[in-house]
Length: 157
Image (cartoon, rainbow, N blue to C red; front, side):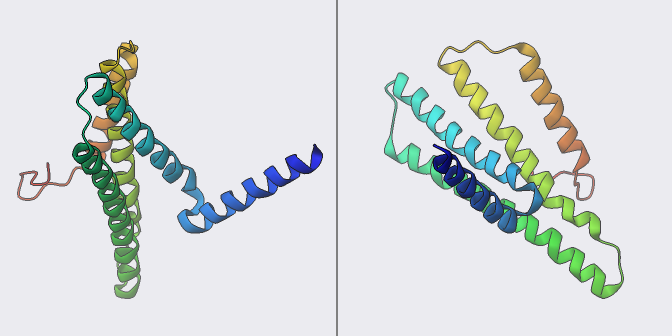
């Protein structure tokens, strides 16, 4: 029995070490987002199944959308890293650009949670009101913290 637990611990350690090397110290945020992607897709599928509206075309579109989220997250982290390094070369402090990727990731995490909650309501699960309001507040804080306007007009919403 001890050997089984040792193998589980070693396997878990290898997985965490790999994720930490790829995603850095915040690997758990990326893993959580991946899990939420899967739960959202499955809960959306279940909602469609309950209503007899399931469609492979819509399901495939959902998967493509999730992959696109990951691409945008990757691009935003790359932008932050690149601008910080360019700032180092030019002697300009641009370290704050590293937060760009985290703002995008946090925004997508909130959206995934919202979608999971919406799907939960559609299948008849009653949610506490404070959960929905708390998520709204969190979303507003993220949006206001990363508010980017061009010429007084937000062109990216």
